[in-house]
Image (cartoon, rainbow, N blue to C red; front, side, top):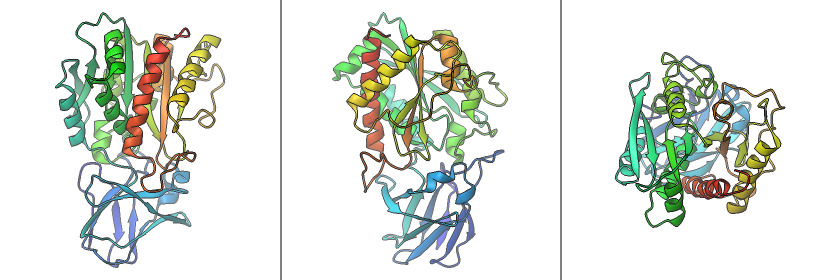
Length: 377
């Protein structure tokens, strides 16, 4: 019987695996950081054995409430990931399972590998409506990919930017992005044709390739939380943000969405930039329109629960949305999805799933089109 994690986005440390009924594990911290919560590992050689796996340091995780009422993801084929009951006792997260096969994978959320990322970029570029720019290298030497989607005949003046996975453990953000790209590049989809005819859409499908491959929760290779680097990023510590911010300054931004996941809150919701010193009634109307339209379009999205808005004048300009709204005077929002499930629309088998991420992306694009065509834009 063995526990392994030496693969893309793997993260676990073995304390003791000498007994199948008392496997003791702990989550590895992000490099040069105190953050940890993401895990992804494989158990082999335990087919038919009643196993108990205990993550001993759950209480010290970045968001310990994220493990309350949480159900782990389990897969035998790395394609279908099903929810499995866990228990939280004295700050330890326990998983009781009798593996049906010789190899079984466990993850905090459904992984999105860098190999799949490269496939996504390559597949997108088969469309004549998509072009690519390698913005530069990350600290680990990986490419930072930017896609530009627009119709060949477009005379678009609006630039819409969407980024995902600043926090690498929030892999649902890239599943959302996969759904977004598939929808936009569907030649038979009238909404997509309209959006690409009227706009230039810029997509960064993975803002944090290094953290993604390393199995980090929240930071890049230098231990930096990218969503606290937007005021003064540097090529030394946060090249990902520096390069994307420069590209945004070059094009201008008329709409901005930053896609994330929330460990603790079992809801889909949007956070705005109400804390800006110049926040106006018009800004509020724009935010209310987009959120309200998205709630009409998708039953998984709601507007009742989320982060409380910041008082005017208290915006954190190190964050992507506040900085982008400050520089470009545009609607800038953070979309959050759950690691657990949505309380109003639960799925006991899959929880918040890859397909629901993709479907929400489709709804977000429709809401974006409606917003850009509205009186409040």
